[in-house]
Amino acid sequence: MEEHALSDRNHLHEGLVAGIVAYVLWGLLTIYWKALHGFPPFELIGWRIVSSFVILTVFALANGRLRTIARSCFSRELAPRIAAAAMLVTVNWSSYVWAVSHDHVIETALGYFMAPLLTMWLGVAVLKEKLNTAQRITISLAVVAIAVLTVGYGRVPILALLIAASWAFYGLLKRQVPMSSLDSLTAEMMWLVAPALVLAIAQAGRTDSVTQTADSLHLTLVILTGVITVVPLWMFGFAAQRVPLTVLGPLQYSVPTINFLLGWLAYNESLGTTKIIGFGFVWIALAVLGVDTYRRSVSSTARYRR
Image (cartoon, rainbow, N blue to C red; front, side, top):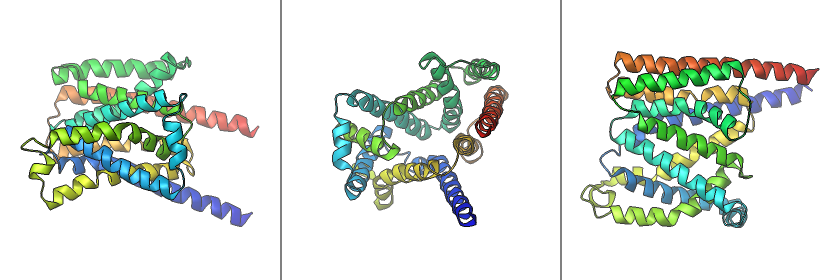
Protein backbone atom coordinates (compact mmCIF):
# COMPACT_ATOMS: atom_id res chain seq x y z
CA MET A 1 0.00 0.00 0.00
CA GLU A 2 2.78 2.43 0.94
CA GLU A 3 4.66 1.65 -2.29
CA HIS A 4 1.47 2.25 -4.30
CA ALA A 5 0.83 5.57 -2.54
CA LEU A 6 4.44 6.61 -3.11
CA SER A 7 4.14 5.73 -6.80
CA ASP A 8 0.95 7.79 -7.09
CA ARG A 9 2.66 10.76 -5.42
CA ASN A 10 5.63 10.45 -7.78
CA HIS A 11 3.34 10.33 -10.81
CA LEU A 12 1.46 13.38 -9.53
CA HIS A 13 4.70 15.26 -8.89
CA GLU A 14 6.11 14.38 -12.32
CA GLY A 15 2.86 15.39 -13.99
CA LEU A 16 2.65 18.67 -12.09
CA VAL A 17 6.21 19.60 -13.01
CA ALA A 18 5.53 18.73 -16.67
CA GLY A 19 2.33 20.79 -16.65
CA ILE A 20 3.99 23.83 -15.12
CA VAL A 21 6.89 23.63 -17.57
CA ALA A 22 4.47 23.27 -20.51
CA TYR A 23 2.49 26.36 -19.52
CA VAL A 24 5.62 28.42 -18.83
CA LEU A 25 7.02 27.43 -22.24
CA TRP A 26 3.75 28.45 -23.90
CA GLY A 27 3.91 31.78 -22.10
CA LEU A 28 7.52 32.39 -23.08
CA LEU A 29 6.80 31.66 -26.75
CA THR A 30 6.11 35.39 -27.03
CA ILE A 31 9.84 36.04 -26.56
CA TYR A 32 10.63 33.46 -29.23
CA TRP A 33 8.29 35.04 -31.79
CA LYS A 34 9.52 38.52 -30.87
CA ALA A 35 13.01 37.40 -31.87
CA LEU A 36 11.58 36.65 -35.33
CA HIS A 37 9.45 39.79 -35.65
CA GLY A 38 11.41 41.10 -38.64
CA PHE A 39 10.11 38.32 -40.90
CA PRO A 40 6.63 38.09 -42.48
CA PRO A 41 4.30 36.48 -39.89
CA PHE A 42 2.50 34.31 -42.45
CA GLU A 43 5.79 32.97 -43.78
CA LEU A 44 6.72 32.03 -40.21
CA ILE A 45 3.41 30.19 -39.81
CA GLY A 46 4.11 28.30 -43.04
CA TRP A 47 7.49 27.14 -41.78
CA ARG A 48 6.05 26.36 -38.35
CA ILE A 49 3.52 24.00 -39.90
CA VAL A 50 6.15 22.34 -42.09
CA SER A 51 8.57 21.94 -39.18
CA SER A 52 5.82 20.59 -36.92
CA PHE A 53 4.72 18.15 -39.63
CA VAL A 54 8.25 16.74 -39.98
CA ILE A 55 8.72 16.29 -36.22
CA LEU A 56 5.27 14.81 -35.63
CA THR A 57 5.61 12.45 -38.60
CA VAL A 58 8.95 11.14 -37.32
CA PHE A 59 7.42 10.71 -33.85
CA ALA A 60 4.40 8.88 -35.29
CA LEU A 61 6.66 6.61 -37.37
CA ALA A 62 8.78 5.79 -34.32
CA ASN A 63 5.64 4.80 -32.41
CA GLY A 64 4.06 2.89 -35.28
CA ARG A 65 1.12 5.31 -35.37
CA LEU A 66 1.54 6.98 -38.76
CA ARG A 67 -0.68 4.66 -40.79
CA THR A 68 -3.47 4.78 -38.18
CA ILE A 69 -3.29 8.58 -38.03
CA ALA A 70 -3.34 8.87 -41.83
CA ARG A 71 -6.42 6.62 -42.04
CA SER A 72 -8.23 8.73 -39.43
CA CYS A 73 -7.09 11.95 -41.08
CA PHE A 74 -8.82 11.13 -44.36
CA SER A 75 -11.68 8.99 -43.10
CA ARG A 76 -15.19 10.02 -44.09
CA GLU A 77 -16.25 10.39 -40.46
CA LEU A 78 -13.30 12.39 -39.04
CA ALA A 79 -11.87 14.24 -42.04
CA PRO A 80 -14.29 17.23 -41.90
CA ARG A 81 -13.62 17.77 -38.17
CA ILE A 82 -9.87 17.41 -38.51
CA ALA A 83 -9.79 19.75 -41.51
CA ALA A 84 -11.88 22.33 -39.64
CA ALA A 85 -9.62 22.01 -36.57
CA ALA A 86 -6.59 22.50 -38.83
CA MET A 87 -8.08 25.73 -40.17
CA LEU A 88 -8.85 27.01 -36.68
CA VAL A 89 -5.37 26.28 -35.30
CA THR A 90 -3.92 28.09 -38.32
CA VAL A 91 -6.10 31.13 -37.57
CA ASN A 92 -5.07 31.02 -33.91
CA TRP A 93 -1.34 30.69 -34.62
CA SER A 94 -1.45 33.37 -37.33
CA SER A 95 -3.36 35.85 -35.16
CA TYR A 96 -1.00 35.31 -32.26
CA VAL A 97 2.23 35.59 -34.28
CA TRP A 98 0.94 38.63 -36.20
CA ALA A 99 -0.06 40.31 -32.93
CA VAL A 100 3.32 39.67 -31.31
CA SER A 101 5.16 40.90 -34.41
CA HIS A 102 3.10 44.12 -34.45
CA ASP A 103 3.42 44.98 -30.73
CA HIS A 104 0.02 43.75 -29.55
CA VAL A 105 1.26 41.31 -26.88
CA ILE A 106 -1.16 42.59 -24.24
CA GLU A 107 -4.03 42.00 -26.65
CA THR A 108 -2.92 38.37 -27.08
CA ALA A 109 -3.06 38.06 -23.29
CA LEU A 110 -6.62 39.36 -23.36
CA GLY A 111 -7.50 36.78 -26.02
CA TYR A 112 -6.22 33.86 -23.97
CA PHE A 113 -7.85 35.21 -20.80
CA MET A 114 -11.17 35.35 -22.67
CA ALA A 115 -10.85 31.91 -24.31
CA PRO A 116 -12.17 29.88 -21.32
CA LEU A 117 -15.10 32.29 -20.97
CA LEU A 118 -15.99 31.81 -24.63
CA THR A 119 -15.54 28.04 -24.21
CA MET A 120 -18.12 28.16 -21.44
CA TRP A 121 -20.52 30.10 -23.69
CA LEU A 122 -20.06 27.48 -26.42
CA GLY A 123 -20.99 24.82 -23.90
CA VAL A 124 -24.34 26.56 -23.52
CA ALA A 125 -24.91 27.56 -27.15
CA VAL A 126 -23.70 24.37 -28.85
CA LEU A 127 -23.76 21.59 -26.26
CA LYS A 128 -26.94 22.89 -24.55
CA GLU A 129 -25.34 22.93 -21.12
CA LYS A 130 -27.13 24.84 -18.35
CA LEU A 131 -25.69 27.99 -16.78
CA ASN A 132 -25.68 28.40 -13.02
CA THR A 133 -25.72 31.80 -11.32
CA ALA A 134 -21.93 32.10 -11.11
CA GLN A 135 -21.56 31.33 -14.81
CA ARG A 136 -24.18 33.94 -15.76
CA ILE A 137 -22.27 36.50 -13.71
CA THR A 138 -19.04 35.44 -15.42
CA ILE A 139 -20.43 35.92 -18.94
CA SER A 140 -21.99 39.28 -17.98
CA LEU A 141 -18.64 40.48 -16.64
CA ALA A 142 -16.93 39.35 -19.85
CA VAL A 143 -19.39 41.36 -21.95
CA VAL A 144 -18.76 44.44 -19.79
CA ALA A 145 -15.00 43.87 -20.13
CA ILE A 146 -15.22 43.80 -23.94
CA ALA A 147 -17.25 47.03 -23.93
CA VAL A 148 -14.76 48.79 -21.64
CA LEU A 149 -11.75 47.54 -23.59
CA THR A 150 -13.34 48.66 -26.85
CA VAL A 151 -13.35 52.18 -25.39
CA GLY A 152 -9.78 51.71 -24.10
CA TYR A 153 -8.42 50.57 -27.46
CA GLY A 154 -10.55 52.98 -29.44
CA ARG A 155 -11.74 49.96 -31.43
CA VAL A 156 -13.16 46.48 -30.89
CA PRO A 157 -10.25 44.25 -29.73
CA ILE A 158 -10.45 42.16 -32.90
CA LEU A 159 -7.17 40.28 -32.37
CA ALA A 160 -8.15 39.24 -28.85
CA LEU A 161 -11.58 38.08 -30.00
CA LEU A 162 -10.07 36.22 -32.97
CA ILE A 163 -7.56 34.44 -30.72
CA ALA A 164 -10.23 33.59 -28.14
CA ALA A 165 -12.80 32.43 -30.71
CA SER A 166 -10.39 30.31 -32.76
CA TRP A 167 -9.03 28.64 -29.61
CA ALA A 168 -12.47 27.99 -28.09
CA PHE A 169 -13.92 26.53 -31.32
CA TYR A 170 -10.72 24.52 -31.80
CA GLY A 171 -11.17 23.03 -28.34
CA LEU A 172 -14.80 22.22 -29.14
CA LEU A 173 -13.78 20.33 -32.29
CA LYS A 174 -10.96 18.51 -30.49
CA ARG A 175 -13.56 17.06 -28.12
CA GLN A 176 -15.23 15.47 -31.12
CA VAL A 177 -12.08 13.79 -32.47
CA PRO A 178 -11.31 10.52 -30.62
CA MET A 179 -7.53 10.86 -30.86
CA SER A 180 -4.73 11.87 -28.49
CA SER A 181 -3.57 15.49 -28.64
CA LEU A 182 -0.36 14.61 -30.52
CA ASP A 183 -2.11 12.24 -32.94
CA SER A 184 -4.81 14.78 -33.76
CA LEU A 185 -2.22 17.55 -34.23
CA THR A 186 -0.31 15.22 -36.58
CA ALA A 187 -3.49 14.68 -38.59
CA GLU A 188 -4.09 18.45 -38.70
CA MET A 189 -0.57 19.04 -40.00
CA MET A 190 -1.20 16.45 -42.73
CA TRP A 191 -4.03 18.65 -43.97
CA LEU A 192 -1.95 21.82 -43.69
CA VAL A 193 1.56 20.89 -44.86
CA ALA A 194 0.94 21.29 -48.61
CA PRO A 195 -0.67 24.75 -48.43
CA ALA A 196 1.93 25.75 -45.80
CA LEU A 197 4.74 24.88 -48.22
CA VAL A 198 3.04 26.90 -50.96
CA LEU A 199 2.64 29.83 -48.53
CA ALA A 200 6.27 29.70 -47.40
CA ILE A 201 7.53 29.53 -50.99
CA ALA A 202 5.20 32.34 -52.09
CA GLN A 203 6.51 34.56 -49.27
CA ALA A 204 10.14 33.68 -50.03
CA GLY A 205 10.39 36.34 -52.73
CA ARG A 206 9.82 39.19 -50.28
CA THR A 207 12.85 41.30 -49.42
CA ASP A 208 12.29 40.68 -45.68
CA SER A 209 11.62 36.93 -46.01
CA VAL A 210 13.44 34.20 -44.08
CA THR A 211 15.13 32.85 -47.20
CA GLN A 212 16.33 36.31 -48.26
CA THR A 213 17.54 37.83 -44.99
CA ALA A 214 17.84 35.26 -42.16
CA ASP A 215 21.28 34.73 -40.65
CA SER A 216 22.27 31.36 -39.18
CA LEU A 217 20.78 32.14 -35.75
CA HIS A 218 17.39 33.22 -37.08
CA LEU A 219 17.29 30.38 -39.60
CA THR A 220 17.85 27.94 -36.71
CA LEU A 221 15.03 29.58 -34.75
CA VAL A 222 12.70 29.21 -37.73
CA ILE A 223 13.62 25.55 -38.19
CA LEU A 224 12.98 24.90 -34.49
CA THR A 225 9.46 26.37 -34.55
CA GLY A 226 8.18 22.80 -34.85
CA VAL A 227 10.07 21.84 -31.69
CA ILE A 228 8.61 24.73 -29.68
CA THR A 229 5.18 23.68 -30.92
CA VAL A 230 5.40 19.97 -30.18
CA VAL A 231 7.40 19.85 -26.91
CA PRO A 232 4.97 21.85 -24.71
CA LEU A 233 2.03 19.93 -26.17
CA TRP A 234 3.71 16.61 -25.43
CA MET A 235 4.49 17.74 -21.87
CA PHE A 236 0.90 18.87 -21.39
CA GLY A 237 -0.35 15.47 -22.58
CA PHE A 238 2.02 13.81 -20.11
CA ALA A 239 0.67 16.01 -17.31
CA ALA A 240 -2.99 15.52 -18.23
CA GLN A 241 -2.64 11.77 -17.65
CA ARG A 242 -1.28 12.28 -14.12
CA VAL A 243 -2.76 15.49 -12.70
CA PRO A 244 -6.46 16.15 -11.98
CA LEU A 245 -7.95 18.72 -14.35
CA THR A 246 -9.11 20.74 -11.34
CA VAL A 247 -5.41 21.28 -10.59
CA LEU A 248 -4.19 21.52 -14.18
CA GLY A 249 -7.00 23.78 -15.40
CA PRO A 250 -6.19 26.91 -13.37
CA LEU A 251 -2.57 26.71 -14.53
CA GLN A 252 -3.72 27.72 -18.02
CA TYR A 253 -4.06 31.29 -16.81
CA SER A 254 -0.30 31.46 -16.32
CA VAL A 255 0.09 31.77 -20.13
CA PRO A 256 -1.87 35.01 -20.63
CA THR A 257 -0.47 36.31 -17.33
CA ILE A 258 3.08 35.87 -18.66
CA ASN A 259 2.04 37.53 -21.94
CA PHE A 260 0.42 40.42 -20.09
CA LEU A 261 3.52 41.02 -17.98
CA LEU A 262 5.82 40.73 -21.00
CA GLY A 263 3.76 43.20 -23.02
CA TRP A 264 3.56 45.66 -20.14
CA LEU A 265 7.00 45.38 -18.51
CA ALA A 266 9.32 44.01 -21.22
CA TYR A 267 7.89 45.52 -24.41
CA ASN A 268 6.51 48.77 -22.93
CA GLU A 269 3.07 48.48 -24.49
CA SER A 270 0.66 51.14 -23.29
CA LEU A 271 -1.72 50.21 -20.49
CA GLY A 272 -4.05 53.08 -19.70
CA THR A 273 -6.64 53.26 -16.93
CA THR A 274 -9.48 52.11 -19.17
CA LYS A 275 -7.57 49.01 -20.25
CA ILE A 276 -6.72 48.20 -16.62
CA ILE A 277 -10.41 48.47 -15.71
CA GLY A 278 -11.34 46.24 -18.67
CA PHE A 279 -8.77 43.62 -17.69
CA GLY A 280 -10.03 43.93 -14.13
CA PHE A 281 -13.50 42.79 -15.21
CA VAL A 282 -11.92 39.84 -17.05
CA TRP A 283 -9.90 38.85 -13.96
CA ILE A 284 -12.96 39.11 -11.70
CA ALA A 285 -14.89 36.94 -14.15
CA LEU A 286 -12.11 34.34 -14.13
CA ALA A 287 -11.97 34.42 -10.32
CA VAL A 288 -15.74 33.81 -10.12
CA LEU A 289 -15.41 30.98 -12.64
CA GLY A 290 -12.46 29.45 -10.76
CA VAL A 291 -14.24 29.50 -7.39
CA ASP A 292 -17.40 28.02 -8.92
CA THR A 293 -15.43 25.27 -10.67
CA TYR A 294 -13.59 24.42 -7.44
CA ARG A 295 -16.81 24.25 -5.42
CA ARG A 296 -18.52 22.01 -7.95
CA SER A 297 -15.44 19.78 -8.06
CA VAL A 298 -15.41 19.43 -4.26
CA SER A 299 -19.15 18.74 -4.23
CA SER A 300 -18.82 16.12 -6.98
CA THR A 301 -15.94 14.41 -5.18
CA ALA A 302 -17.93 14.30 -1.93
CA ARG A 303 -20.94 12.71 -3.67
CA TYR A 304 -18.65 10.15 -5.35
CA ARG A 305 -17.15 9.14 -1.99
CA ARG A 306 -20.60 8.53 -0.54
